[in-house]
Image (tube, rainbow, N blue to C red; front, side, top):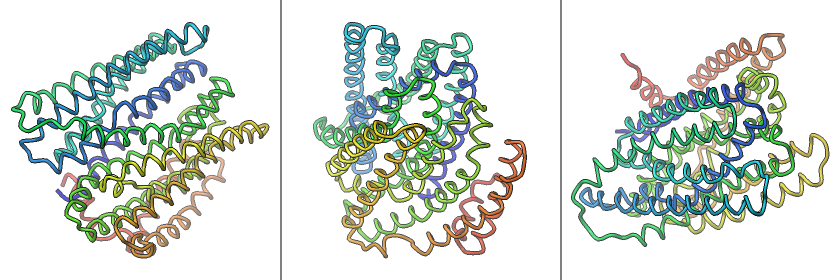
Length: 486
């Protein structure tokens, strides 16, 4: 199957799952008090950090090892991968139990203490669930991966609002996520056992080799999560839970759009790994350039459009109670263009995981220092709004570094590596398309009506101008047609 089609299947699945999952914060922001919703999201932030490192880079290691092993060796790889994950899950559950007891002793009355051990159980379960997506993708089974994504999202949609309805507290939400995790675990283990673990195991285990590859990736993922969430830690430390709830919803959007680059990465990285093994730098350059070209066509117009409709979008979804989310949301949109360039695929495929780790540590350190200085030295609204600027600035710095290192790896120059002509056309077209949307925003329309009119106008005009300027070509048209039912 064509790489673009495989990536788009995953993008469709994640897009559909994303828009379905928007129902969850829409419902929860109405059922829960701001304080309870803020506490719940603080627990989710803790989970995202811990699971990132305790996955030990196993999902990414599948992208590296699976295409390099013979089919008869795959059961061994999968068995040892889930064995490592099981041991990690037991460790994280134990650590959270110890943490809960220590919090009870040394920080009595902490509002998160009653939920820490339960969060550890949830984290341990999800460590065994998360790698299924990468496994399905390296099997070239993107359609099933898409169904898994949507199915897991439907489980969340059915369970979490129900839990909030019956028990609209933080504890009710923790019980809800435990239920969803258990259901997902049953599905994942059934698939893994049936297709791999029950099969004949061929070859010699290489646990340490896989762990050596994976640990820098896992640490990098953890530091990346910390880097993206440092501002939230600061807000949680210096502001109330209700302010955190509004801030979280504003900062949520830009990172979520990472599902697009994640989908492309899961398809492209194994191919880059294969080309690197063959020392085929020309194919690596072509694949990298084409991916950037198509990603920029998505992310830059999205940045412009969402910046203009930020206020009606946020208020429509989360009510006027969260109007203070709008400026935070707008600042975070500056991250979207980095998703077109901050692609560590070449570095992952060429086993430069230690460089990625060092870069992540550097970025997290700079972000932490800058965020702390801003939050402790500014006053009023600027004290809160300046924090996301630190994350955005550091992310752009990392993006430039990754771009430079990638060019060095594939022995390419700046002018050759990136499709500058295409990028210029997309920027110009996006600006032209923004003009009528700004006009619509000046009219006194209901927020939902404004959103619908703006989306239709921007979409039609962008497609028309892109076709005229050859930004969207025959290949893209054929690709879209291949997804149509007739």
